[in-house]
Image (cartoon, rainbow, N blue to C red):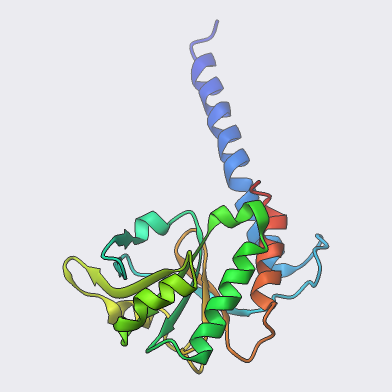
Length: 203
């Protein structure tokens, strides 16, 4: 047997694994953004495309109950996130849309997280978490022991005219890729998420 047989075999195995695990994401990005060759409902995105995609900072979220969630713990999930000074009607509408959009994904909802970041009125956090169960309600954001709220907000700066009531969709690689403002139809986020999971087929 040739001495090169084993290395060649290992190389083929590695290539096969890369194709198996990487191809779904590559196809997902291509078809999601181009809308070509694959017929999945409307060929256009329902939300506002962020181009180029905006990376999220690596931070640690302090939740309403005192627990902490890091960016690393949210990785490999789709994150629906909204930011509010206090939870008014626009904030409540965004939370309902995120809740309904996630629930509609059936078994794929396990790949989705929902988060509200309160920049003020943190005393509302406990009531909000109880009303919109399953939503991560963050009252502070830190990085290396320092306040990182400005760094987080900068990731959303300029993406929508009004931040209050807007929803930002973050991909599993921690990039803001789509935004949804309060004037959009309520099912825009739901439809885009359905399209994503039809392409990726993560079940």
